[in-house]
Image (cartoon, rainbow, N blue to C red; front, side, top):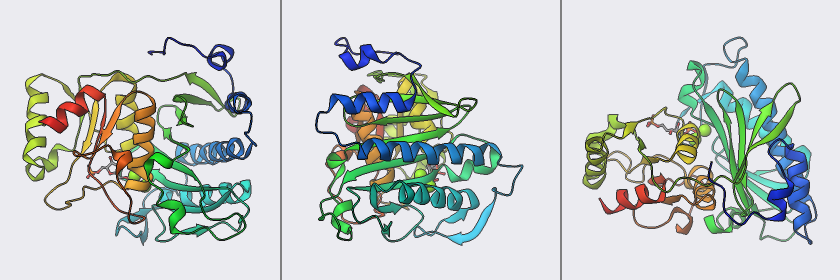
Length: 334
Ligand SMILES: O=P(O)(O)OC[C@H]1O[C@](O)(COP(=O)(O)O)[C@@H](O)[C@@H]1O
Ligand SMILES: [Mg+2]
Ligand SMILES: [Mg+2]
C-alpha cells in the first residue's frame, strides 16, 4: 500500500491497529476549532455499520433475504435488507443527534430526523449491490456528509442536499465482504478500518490509502456492451487487447474497493436505455468520487469530474468512470 512521503505527526502517531474511536479523536485534535459533532456522526455511522454487519452475516439464516414486495422511488424492487439497512441507519443518525436530515436511495423525499439543532445532512445508499444480497456476494453502504446551509433550528431543505460534490465535508462506504470494512475521508487522506467482531471495534488496517495511478483491471457490465457509447466499446476492446482482467461483481462498493487498492477502473456508462446511466449522483457517484480524488484516483462522467457536476434533483443519475487516474483518462479519450 503506497503511503505519501510527508508523514504528518498524526500519521506517525497513529499506528495501524488503533481503534476508529481513537483515530477520530486524534483527527479531531488536529483541528483546533473542531467541536466533536462530526466525530460523533462518524461514530453513529460506524455503529449502524456494525448492526448491518450482524444482519448481513446472518443472511440466509434469518428472514432478511428476498424481495420485500415494495418498490423504491427508482422503481426498483426493494430487498428486505434494503429496508432493514435503511431503518437502521436512519435510527442511528436520529439517535446520534448530529444529523438534521437524511436523503436515502430508498425514500423519495428528505427524512427530517427531528434534530433541527443538528449541523449536518447525510445522503446515503443504505444497501449497495442489492442484487447480490441473497447470493452471499459482497455488498455495501455508501454515505456522503454535508454541513447544512439552512439556519440551525430550522427544517433542512433541498438546498442542503444540492450543494455539489465538492462541498462534501466527508464521505465513505462500508463494505460487507469477507471482512467488514469502513473506508472514509474527511478531506485529508483516505483510511480503512476493518471490523474486529470479537472486540466489537473497527481497527485501522489501511492507513492513508493512495490508489495506484494505473492498473490492469476493468469492471463493467459487458452484458450491456451493445448499448454503450462507441468510445466505451472501443475502451473495453482495448482493455481486452491488453489482456486486462475483467472483474465485475455487480456491487459498486465491492468493485470500487478492489480497484482502489489494486488499481483498476469501474465504468457504468450511459446506455441506449438509460442516457444518464444507472448510478445515482448524490449517494453513489459523489461519495465514491470524493474517496477516489482524496486517494489520488479520478472520477468522471466522460466530460467533467463527477465532483464538478451541478446537481438538480435528489435521485438524478450520472454515467461514471472511476478508478486509477491513467485508466480514467484513457477511457475519456477513447
Ligand atoms: O446489474 P447492473 O446493471 O450491472 O448494475 C449493477 C450496479 O447497480 C448497483 O447494484 C446499484 O446499486 P443498488 O444496489 O444500491 O441499487 C451497483 O451496486 C452495481 O454496481
Ligand atoms: Mg447502490
Ligand atoms: Mg442501494
